[in-house]
Length: 190
Image (cartoon, rainbow, N blue to C red; front, side):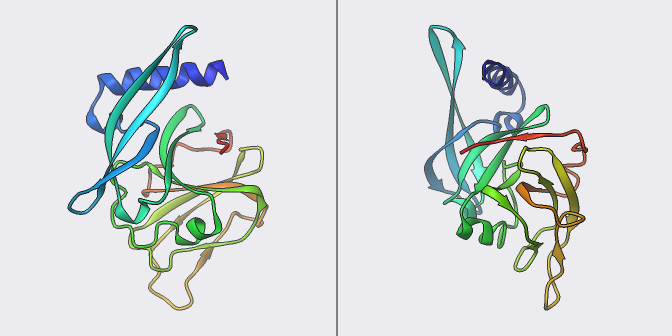
């Protein structure tokens, strides 16, 4: 746990010293105000800076209005932190990134099941191409695919090769997950 806290403190320090895009990598709150094509969400992260104190950092991130009902969280993926919209209920998972034309400051979406799951993903009513990586119950790599918006009926489906059970899936912009390999582990709990 201390390692994770140290990693978050380091990430916040780097974010504070780098571009606005990097500063978006913070745990977000729920306060939102409408903007032209996206919602601006006030974000804050509280990290244990020392044994006797805490540091709170606040920044604004651009979130698509279609994802306004999703929790946002920093998720450890391998050696990186990703700002992801969390789809952890049947309704949120079914909605996925349908109707989203721009992810804004988000790195993508984490699909999370509290138990091992299996099944397929499809791109019905999804406006942008996406890459997906699946992870097993222990967070280890399970497979990947590149998906394109559905223009057919029925839509093509995507699942990890061999259709194993999985616990997590991350969808992101094409190429944004290329660094993930078979040794990458995702760490997340609700």
